[in-house]
Length: 288
Image 1 (cartoon, one colour):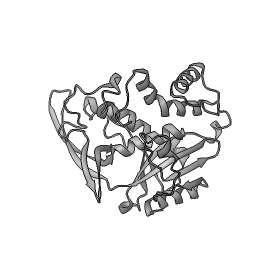
Image 2 (image 1 turned 90 degrees about the vertical axis):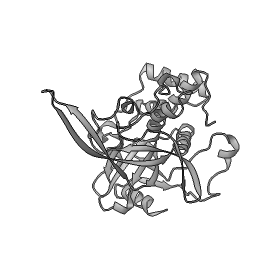
Image 3 (image 1 turned 60 degrees about the vertical axis):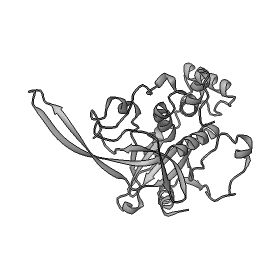
Image 4 (image 1 turned 135 degrees about the horizontal axis):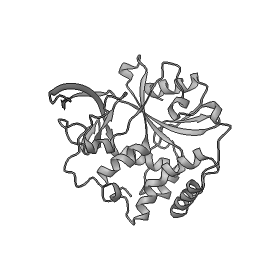
């Protein structure tokens, strides 16, 4: 376990949340993944966390130093005067293949999977940025896999930018150490500073992170936005929710969630909806 993973694990321990560390060394995982479906590789998350009354989530911890860039804006005021201002936004370069492989893990395991961005060089502040991997996949997949997500196609747009004077959002091959992969810029904004400022098409892509300070009294319940009082009163899924989940399970040869609750069926639908829609349209994801 590295330092950044240890910080998150200590945070889980302080809130008395049970967790398991997933060893990332070679040969420390079952080879059944590669044997059963070699065309769909999985990325192992770093931690499995267990929350009483809710279930488990997977956490992939990434120690990234946030990059910063200034964007310039020209606004027309009600009196027809022009007002110009600048603002600074944060972003990271993140591997698209890791997003795919984490999405594959979520699809197979039906465990909600989160990416936790932490900057250990500035760990005294304790801020971490959390993204649901399926939200990133479903959003940016519209741009990077337009042929397989035709209903949301952005291919007709020559360039998509977060802000007018920023570089376009696209996959770029980069080398880090001895490995090379395709990376894309992921905007990391911890407040409402982007509201009304993103370009039209970036609004469709942007995934807002959940921000938790792990040096303070925060918990996973803040992340998934549930309260203790809600857990015993978990209700059954709606009829439409059950029918949609049943169609997904039948098409993808999956088992329905063992727990007949709205939460379990909601997470099942979120984890498998993109793959179901692709199969329904008769398209084959390019990463398989």
